[in-house]
Image (cartoon, rainbow, N blue to C red; front, side, top):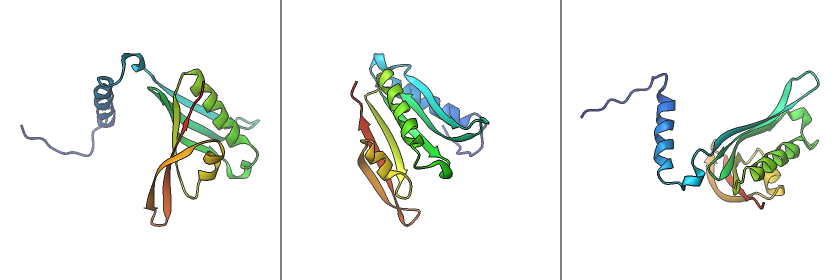
Length: 141
């Protein structure tokens, strides 16, 4: 059978993600099946303008944070802490065992470390001069 490699297909991304999801299900314990849920928290002002937020997903037995962003003029006022604390509370409630996140050296490494996250890996030379850190925090229930 000959196969073609193409770039554009409207549903292609979802099809590949579904293939991987079903493959993974065959390897995970039954009690972790159907454990996927988006977790998006928003920081908004009195006019309902979004000024930051945390975008994550619960997947099997962990929470993965994809984005935690607070408007620069609001930083150092505890909003990032509040967003992270709420995500951790929900992760515990949903019986997650750990949280994982990644960040670049100019972003929030010290912020996560102050909150108990531990580096388990990093890449050098990202953007030629930065490091990319991978962090994890085990959750106690």
